[in-house]
Image (cartoon, rainbow, N blue to C red):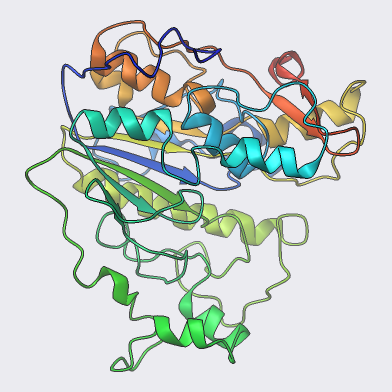
Length: 361
């Protein structure tokens, strides 16, 4: 039995409705509130200029489960806080994370497959081997045009031109380039024959590193004249904001072209480490609490409320698919509590709950 849910894997979870679902995991994006506080911006995603769909709202109590990508994503796909107690060493730590996650046997994936969904994956946060039920859009997170088929015309993340110049001797990177193309921005050949199934409902699990760095585009999504591979949020907060402004343009394009029957979720796995993180999470005070909040309070923006009742402002992290499945099954089968934990690698990989700290006003 999952600790955070009231179901067993032997129990059938049957959807009453089967919409197409797009889940965009945006790596390293701070919550809207923290963007405005720490970066002195005036972001208001609910009022994106030219956005035609008014069903999208911000869920401003969303939390990262573990403050890191794989730890949080593998737990989200199990609808369970997988990492508990003391894990003792790094091998145990990764064994727990990778169980079911690497083999594509998570609770979320099995439930979708059992409801005849096709799962379509993009990006390194979602391990992918193609099966009769799983389609891998891309086997590596490279390319500027690689997600254009489903979301955007440019994805400013580890662009092919950047990779090609940075790893000029890499045979693997050269294989990703179309030999008949006169530009480094011709997209990825893996997408050439990609088709979305029309006979089955689909769920898209898409990991975007637009705002993770290294940053490659300006606020209008045009590539910088020169790219510094060492830039991160701390060294260049202006570049971070540029990438977010570009992302907003792309989100807006997708929202305005999506089907009105689709459920779309934009969510971050964690916020940035904009300031040096504290060493002791058991005795946090003052400025350290602010640093942790920036990391653990996440971005969550969706139209799920149009289709589902009783989705609280804490929608995000492990409870993401719990809320979604409760909605699609018209039940309260899954626990939607929101928690946050820190894993202290210096103390036998002890898992410390910090929910109260990150929720503190």
